[in-house]
Structures are given as C-alpha cells and as structure tokens.
Length: 290
Image: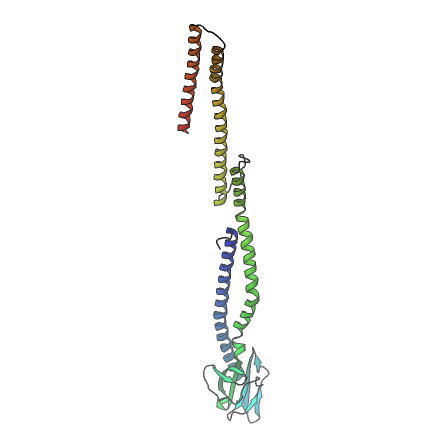
C-alpha cells in the first residue's frame, strides 16, 4: 500500500467501502425481506384456507365445491378431508405426506420426505370436514434465495462500477496535482522559472494550493530576477573604480614621475579604493537585509 499512488489508494478505499455497504444492504434486505415474506406467506395461507371454507358444502349429496374455491394459489395448496382423515378434494404437493395428523390453530412447520412444509388446519361444516393449507417451505422462504442469486450477479457489477467510478473521480480530482508536480520539476531543474500551473480559480483545496504555488513561483522568479539585476548593477559599479585604479597604476609604472605626480596618482587610487570599500560595505548591508 505504501508504494501505491494516492489515486490507487482512494480507488481501493472507495471500492471496499462500496462493497461493504452493498453487502450490508443486501444482507439486511435478505434477512428482513425474507422474514417479512415468510410472515406474509403464512398470513396469506391462513386467509386462503378460511376463504375456501366458505366456498364448500357437505351434506346428504356429499361434498359440493363452489367455483370460487381456490385449490392452488400463491404456491399454497388447499386439501379437503372428512372426519376420518380421508382426502376428499385437492391435489397433494409432491413429497408431502397426506396422512399428517391435524393440528388446529396457527400455521406450523412439519418435515416430510419431500422437504419441509407449512400447514394450516381448520374445521369446517360443523366439524364434519377438515381443511388443510399446505405451503412448501421453499415457497414461503424463497425470497432470500432469489435475493442471494440476484446478489451473486449484481454485487460484482456494483463493485466494478464503484471501482471504475472511484478511479475516474480520483483521476479527475488529482489531475491538478500532476500539473503542480510538472511545474515544480521544471523550476527545480532550472529550465523555466516562468512556469506556472495556471489552474482556473476555484474554491476547492487543490485549486487553492495551485494558486499558492503560482504565487510562490512568481515570487521565486522575481527574486531570481532581482538577484540577476543586483549582480549586474554591482559589477557595473565596481568596474569603474577598478578601471581607474588600474589606469593610475599603469601610468605610475611607465617612468619617472615627480613626487607631486606620485602623490596625485596615489590619491586617485585611494579615492577609488575608498569608493570600492564603501560600495562593498553597501552590498554587504543589502545582503544582510535580504
């Protein structure tokens, strides 16, 4: 991780965060949604059996079933038995034991050779008939399985989209940093002291940093230009007295001179030397001020 770029780190962090959020959300949906779906299925099972109980008659002519009777709806089956437990009407779901004893009350779960089933039993026609609702567990709790299958396909897609989106956002956000680094490298190598980042003014942190760097580069360039001008001016100011001193020395070395001429030449040299000393002192004072 230490050798990764900031863009790569941001992308990895964003991807992991999205993966965690997506997984937690799907887990919540599967858990809560499955429980709600199961509760709804059991409620619907009881309602279907109670509604079907009003659609049948059992008398001297035997069992009469109205057209509104629903033997199968929403994955649940409704079976009709007589008092002895003989199946009179309805289709038994595959794997279910039709001889399962009756237990009137709330829906309950039983195991069978073909799997687990929710049952809801109630008496009808004054106790002469039994109505049984049969709901396979896979139909009652099928939502988590469906959600898990969807998650298996959706989750990788979301992770890929999060990674791609995070990388694009990070690359665009850190693009000014590349310009800052390029400008700093150009100036540090001495190629171009006038190099600027030149980002448009904005309120975010990176653009404010770029503006601060541009101001720093501008002051740095001005400092170098002032130093160059200072060196040029100092050279010019020192060149004149040096030329005078050299000229006087050459003149005094050419031949015999009177004492007055020697005194005049030495005085001129002294004046120029004092001028140079004063100029050097001024330069040293400016350097201390800088």
